[in-house]
Length: 472
Image 1 (cartoon, rainbow, N blue to C red):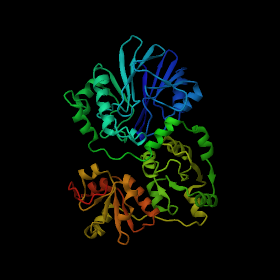
Image 2: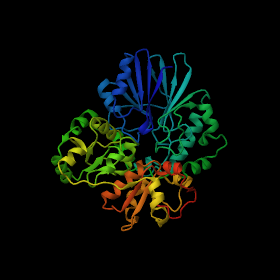
Image 3: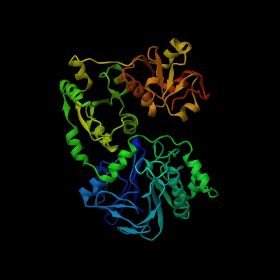
Image 4: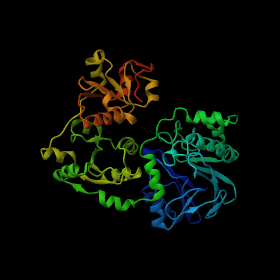
C-alpha cells in the first residue's frame, strides 16, 4: 500500500500521503503545503481529500490552503464544527482514494471530534491506522486540551472517553496493523512518546502502558492524568485558528518578508511594541545583540519555544535573522499561528552595529571556568532551566530548577543584585532564558555554556537529589 510519512522534526509532527491510481489524500498537513503538492505532482496524482484527525492544538493545519489550491475536500470526523465548508463524516463511513479505502473510526478522548482512519488496500486487506493524537507510539494523547476551548469538557471526562475509544475501536483491530501517529518524541501533546514514529498495533498492545488489557477505567484515568504539565499557551489559540480558518500563508509571507534598515526597524519596534526576535546562533547572540531582544535560535526547537514563551499569537514580531533564512523563519512562525511578522533587519545585526546603534552582550563562561572561579561560592545562585524530569534525573547540587516553560511566571524570584548562573542540557535553553531575563532588565547573570553535557565531560559531580525549592 502506498502510504508515506512526511515527518517534520522541529515539531515532532507526522503528516501522511496516500496515493492510488492517480488519486491522493493528505492526512494532517502542516501550514506550508508545497511539499504535498510536489509529492502529488511527482505521481501525477490529484489530491482528492484532506483528512483531519482532529482540530490540532500544536500547529496550524494546511487544510484550507490545500483545499483552495487543489479543490480537495476537507474531511473531519463526527461532531466537528468548522466555520468553513468540510465533510463531517459519520462513524464507519468509507471514502475511496483510487483503489484504496479509508474508513472513519470515531475515537473521542483527546478531543471530542478525534478520529482514527483505517487504511484498506486494493485487495480489501486492512493495512494500518492513522491515529492522530488518539494513539502514539508508547503513549496516548493528553486529554486536557479541549477544556481550554470548551470548559465543560474536563480532563477526567475526556480521559474516560479515550479509554472507551481505545478499548472499543482500536484494541479489537488486528495486531499486524501499522500505527501511524501524528507526533513523535518531543511533542507536548503527550507525556512519554517513543522516538519511533511507527509500530505495529500488536507490539503497542504489549508495551504501551495505556493499552494494558487488564486496566480499569479508573486506573487509566489516574495514570493518564498523573504528571501532566500545563500545555503551552498557544495551544488553544491554534485550535481556534483551525476551527475558524486563517489567512493564506502566501499572503502572510508577502507581508512579512520586508527588509527594514536599522532606523526603520527601530522606529517600528517603538511604534508597535513588537518583540524583537533574534534567531541567529547562540554564539552570534552572546557576542552582540539588540538590547531587550529575545533569543530563540532557529537551530533548536524554534517554533514550539516561540509558542511557549510568547503568549499571544497576534503579537507583532520583528526579526534579526541570518541572510537567506527569512522565508524559513516566517514559515516556522506561521506553523504555530504567529502570522504578525512586520519585517526583518536588513543586513542583519552587522548593519545595526555599523549604524552605531546601541547593542548588548551576554556574559557566558565554560564549565571549566565555572569550576575554577565560581563553584565554591555560588551560594545557591545557580538555576537549572530544564524540565523537572530532566532535573530530577541529574543536576548540579544546590541548583534551583526553574523550567524555561514557566520562566515568565518567576521573574521576580531571581536575585536582583548578586550574580547568578543559568544552565540547561546543552546551552540552547539557558541562552533563551538569559535573553528573557535581560529583556526584563535583569543583567546580573552569567550563562554556563554547554550545560549538563559539558559538566559530564568535565567530571563535575551531578546529583539526583531533588531540591525542595524547585520553581514550577
